[in-house]
Amino acid sequence: MNKKEEISISVIKRLPRYYRYLDSLKRNGIVRISSKELAQRMGLTASQIRHDFNCFGGFGQQGYGYNVPELYKKIGEILDVGGEKKMVLVGAGNLGKAVANKIFSTDSGFRLIGIFDKNIALCGNMIKGIPVRSIDYIENFCIDNKPVCAVLCIPSDDMKELIDMLVRLGVKSFWNFSNYDILMSHPDVLCENVHLADSLMTLGYLTSTEGQA
Image (tube, rainbow, N blue to C red):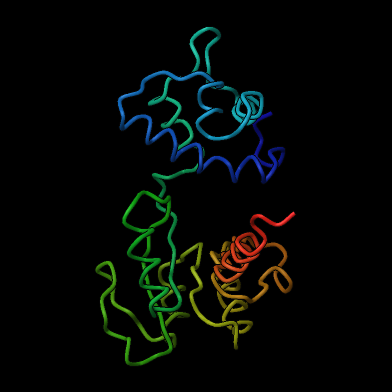
């Protein structure tokens, strides 16, 4: 069972968490760990961990456990953290700037090649060594540079025209910080939605109900 289409999204979403934990273990000089020990650290079960890793062929050895540096490397390869997938960022305000500076300071599997905004006052600013360009230039830029992914850090207003154009120009995946539902009009693209307000409201609910029967 190693074909991508056979692996559930819940397993895939756990891979970055494994990667972070293994990085911490590696930095602390831990070379070997059992599925039971890793499960205890992560609040999972050993059987869950073995199942997840078996989706990709399994990485442990009977009686030995997992080699931490090797497992870290293997999961990194699965996640393609060393990849160079071309990505553009739309929205150079506070959120877009924070995303660019934080995410693209580490291996992410993506290479940020262009930043765009409709606010003319932001155009010409530099973020991660990349100039902010007017959104008016994004079509020609995509034609020339062929990005495959876009980060959206803009409001949902007037999003449809932009998405339609990006898909037409070959953008296949979106990291979407807006509330616009891309998959409604483009069900064949890949989209990872990040709803910060939803996450905060969930925390608000949990905080307000803490201690209630």
